[in-house]
Length: 238
Ligand SMILES: [Zn+2]
Image (cartoon, rainbow, N blue to C red; front, side):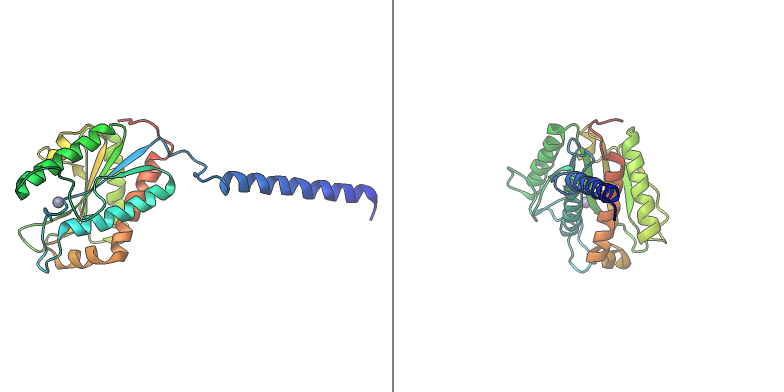
């Protein structure tokens, strides 16, 4: 083997090493993802919380437990991506600070949630609830968005599409604006989406909502869309 060839070979090997080390440094040795999501805050709102369990299914399942189960999965996923995530509540209890009756505690809890959202005006709010209806045939997740907010509408529509396509092919529901009478959302200016993940009054929905695999699916749909739409964002663009 001649000398020039050996030198060329060593140079080539060194170049490859430098490239590999650079890739590892950027992609592996930093504790944050290479894309910037650190500036975008996400507030995750698990609806209700004891003593207010929200809706109750025929088998005694309470809405607040299911809301928290999905909210925790959303938190884990978005936190892993690098978003700054704030949980409105992270255990079975609501976050009231005063009140002697359930109603008074609920009022206190709602006011605190409004306060958290207002203290983080740039945060995107994702709220998790379950639905009920007077008849048991009504079923399927439905994702609502803040009226007048394009980004909220885009995110809600995309989450709805993924849920319908991947997890509930029979679901024909479409995204709609959050009704104006929902206290939390009518008192905050944050971009936000409200995911009503299914009907506790429908036995098929209830079975799915209790299934960890379905909870994971819904949480994935929510976090993937939020990541895709808000990744790199540092503004609260409408
Ligand atoms: Zn609810």
